[in-house]
Structure formats: structure tokens, C-alpha cells
Length: 345
Image (cartoon, rainbow, N blue to C red; front, side, top):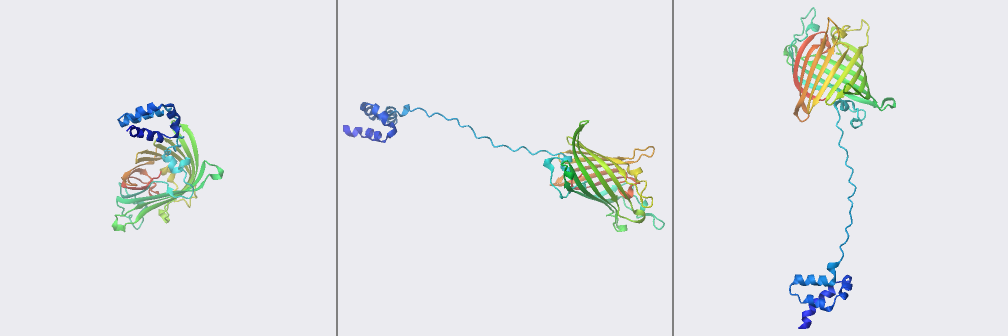
């Protein structure tokens, strides 16, 4: 009976392992027998641990594990201003050469009302005019292409080419077969220099040296055209962009000039103010000849707002001279409603 009682203690001693042999030799047989006499399993095992020295093993020193170097978090993408996106003024905005991009506003106005349609150019000895209606449709498509990035090895100069076509369509005038009464075509060449300076709280972003030819492609008494060279200065402050563009009309011979007095009505430059807030954009275009008493000019207001997806609504108001080339010496007010197809400036 005595041998049977000590069997569990002997078996546990054999299983204690080589690492505990030193502690087992140090403990007396009476210590081991005392543990085997404990009836409760948990207490008996605790006793064996104590006698074997397991409970006295030094705590393994904790090794300070330094966290791995945090992976570099990429910086948040830079928020580009309207001017930067339009002319690719920042490195993040550059898209390379030969890519079609919006130039001036692209829109379709299915309904546009004018308080004074200009029938005078179509009058002659045989007809009193076309019989234009007050309501018509207007469409403008405009794009530009960067032809060279870094002109003459200068990182801050790019060469652009642009093209704009604006059509005025008597779409609802069935009495004269709904003709396009006027279409203006304007190709441009532009050398854009990036700048960075402050003036009156505005940041000067670019200077644009440009050449523009604008004509309506018609003959005889309906032909209108002019060529200009201009310098455009671009400024911005927050969501506000300011573009100042004085121009000089290249003189033509008296015989070839279809509209020698166009400068008296279209002035010698324009001012464009663009303000963007959220997905809404507002713009104001001003022209003036700065003459007295024959002061003439024009005002154009545009508003684009979100509709569905990328499609935006578009509202346009015009007051003054020169809404189109055929109307350069005719004053009228017009209001149109439609859609913006692509942003421009």
C-alpha cells in the first residue's frame, strides 16, 4: 500500500525534465512525499512546482520591441486652383503635350432670348431682312492643346494652340428654314509663362502672350474679321481668379477691312472674373472702349451648377455690344438657359 501511494510522485518526478534535475536533487524525499500526500490535485501540483523550484524560476526579462519604422504616409494630393488646372501651372497639374483640353466655356443653350435681334446686316434693296426671331439656340465648343512643354528649354514656358467655335442658330424659325444666322471661328496661339508673385493680396500665376484670329467665314457685306495680339495676366486669391487681357488689333488695309471701327465697340481689352464654390462656378466678363462721350462696352454673366453626374446646368446673361461678330456694332440684351458640357475659362 505504501508503494502504491508513492507511485504518482515518482511518475511526476520522471516527467519533470532535465532542466529541473538540479532542483529535485536539492529537495529531500520527505518534501516529495509530503506533496504526494496532498489529496487535492491543484494543491498537490502546486506543491510539486514549489519543491522542484519551478515557481522560483526567474522571470524572463522582457525585451523592448521597438515598433517598426512607420511606413511613410504619402502626402495628401495638392488641391489645384482653377488657373493651375486650366494652364497646368503646378507640377501636379502637368499632363504632357498633345492632349485635348477645354479652353473657353463649352455649353449648349437650347433656349436663348434676345430683346433686339440684329436684322440690319441682312437688309438690302431686295429684302427687309431675314425676319429673325427673338428666341434662338446657341452652341459653343472650345478646346486647346499643349504643343510644347518647356519652350526653348525654359521649364516655366509652354506653347498652346486653341480653337473656339460659337454658333447662333435660329432653330425655331421655320419661316426661314431654321438657319444658322452666325458662326464665329477663333484659332489662337498662346505662349504661357508661369509666374509667382504677390500684388494687392493676389498671387500672379501666369503671363500669356497670344495671337488671335476671329472671323465668321462669310463673304460680301456679311464678312467680319479681325486679328489681335494680346497679353493676359492671371491672378488668384482663394477661389477667386482674375484675368486681365489688353489687346492690340493688327491693322488691315482699308480695302480688306470688313469692320474698320470694330475697336470703337469691342474696346481694347477685357477683364474676366471667375469664382468657384463647391461645384458651382460664376464668371463675369467685362469690355469697354474707355471713351467719352461714345462709351461702349459689354457685360456677360455665366453660372454653372451641378445637375446629373458631370453634366451641369448653365445660365448666361449678356448686355452690350459684340455678342457675335455680326453684332459687333449692335447692342442687345440676351438670356439663355442650357447645359455646360465642359469647364473652360
